[in-house]
Image: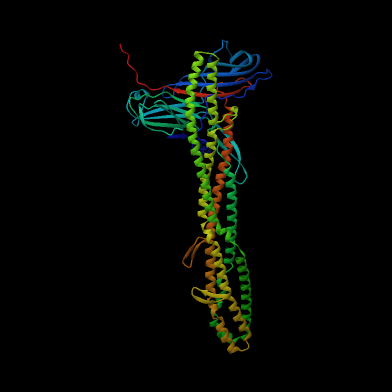
Length: 638
């Protein structure tokens, strides 16, 4: 169980912090860091600081001691001014007198090629990281002293808080390629492994999500990786008897926990372009249908239905009949020509590709899911390799301690070489696991694992997006059939055919009938009868046009057509637009996150000293917190 606290109004930066939390093990001391150059003196110096914080069981510091390791390369005598708020200082190995100044401490050292100089210092400077431990027994919070020697369910919560907050305005490119400026807040990256040793003879039923577990005898070491932005709490629970807690060690390193892969933003941009293209196509279809439906006015043909009642007037005016027939024939000619053009345009369109899109999107989602399964399998394989390698490193660490003790107790060429060889073996194992450029290995197994995990994590939202797209695009599969039905309805309107079980004549038939009326107008009596028979079907024309108009609007906006509910092209446009907007927001978040991660990486690189370092020197810094263990007090026998 772990929790991370973040500023409530910095949601985007919190998202970036969540992407960075991966299990990475780092060595306590850097290997072969490059040295800087001190002016024109010809000396190169690397300042390596380890800040030891001895605290009570709750994390309240009792002593803060800095061990500073100066690595100097050159020849001759050099005076180094190591700045910092120092209250006390002493050399650890050499008999060199320090000179305390207002700026810090000065050392005058003789160097022949290479010199390693160690000294310790005390300081009252505020630590950049705070560690707090809270203890519970059977669900109730207790003081550490109450826990010692007790029996029950123990819960330990360790909270690491980062004090190094940074707020700044950053520029980034949004999904449309426009530069946007936003104020972000982040904390200088601090990777904090929390190590809690559990005595297997006292505790069982242990619950905790430690990234690393090592076993030495009956003791199981649980190491949790915290990445406070600004704070993170890890916890462990267990059942204990005659409870005693080993000292808790929290190591803090200025470094990123990992680097997320932002390349998926390019794939999202391509997908968004495709969605925008589909949305433009659908909007065009919607506009065409609206124009066609809007051009149909059944009221214009209402007068046709009253032709039968007007036959009496036709008998009294053959001239009026002839003029009316000719005008109506011309009107139908125009309508037929208009329908010919509309039908031709509909039949010329190809909608097969659009109809295949839902199936294609589903297949693409399945393929991406298969890739993710493969990446997850590789991550699991590498996790096992890392666990095995960690066990080897733990064993080698024990050997290294014994070799170092042997070399100290019996210093000779053999013991010294043995200690150096075991130490080099430890560095090689660390390089194999975590990478070490100085050892010739830029990346380790952990980097490979993190990269594969980043690929897998990046594929998950892509799979979800593709599946959502496939579901949202399902209505497109029926689009060709809808347009075919529309073309068939227009052909029936023009040429006649079966409509709802009834044979109806088309406009061409009506035009032919009007021709007969015009040719037979000289035979008034018989001509009027013939015209009456030919014009009778026209009484249904306004109703047909009204149904056609409703159908076209239903295809455009959705609605009921002959008892069936049509979704409408407008809904497709809305869905495609919403998906495009969602992808744009994701692209914006990814672009901003990439910029913030770059700033955090730079901040981690620049935080290379706590007290300060000589001008021109390179540096490394780490913080080691050791919290007191909890044991029952033993009464004195008198």
